[in-house]
Image (cartoon, rainbow, N blue to C red; front, top):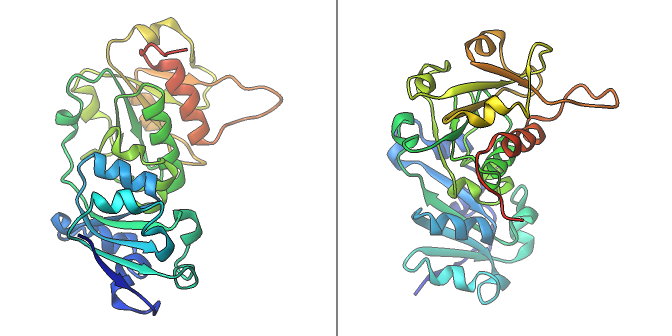
Length: 272
């Protein structure tokens, strides 16, 4: 049975993890084994549970206990379930986007890149993509469009930040990802991947070039919002690819570009 605890005051200490701890405090870089993240919305929580993440506590709008949250709560026995009326919970920033349910969960230790990439033919490398919305959207596209894993440089937003996980619709729990040890591509190249820089350069291949599809192991490298990839990173890559554009449009948002790139460069067979 769940232990249901009703909260009547927004300043109650039980709400600290949901209302007052920053993403950095939840991440707990000093003691990563104690790190937490907040899963928002029933769908995201369900996908985290399916992936084996361990819940610590749950916060739910009171009316959802016997409604939309009922089946999820059955899967999280013996943890405290804090509930409150809607007017209290709306004091939480962005609560209306959570569909009435949040869950604090333990993080898992991250694998090294060489462990994560075993038997994977198509991977994504994100270089200093700092916006959690973009990270979440890119991961969703990677999962949906045939990529096998996502690797991030340390300058990227963490995929388990609540906004990133929410925007991904929980696909951060359905595709493998980890952080690289360095900001260069050496870790990737030593694993046998050919690297593709997605960059706005004129001396580039068409994204539909047959040579790209034929590569056995391919890493699609995408850069930060605005500036894109550095010239140094582009020079390190085996290929440079530019998405053709029309009507005077000079670029796409990195998340939108990722969907085009992954669809074109995947080696998966899609169902009609």
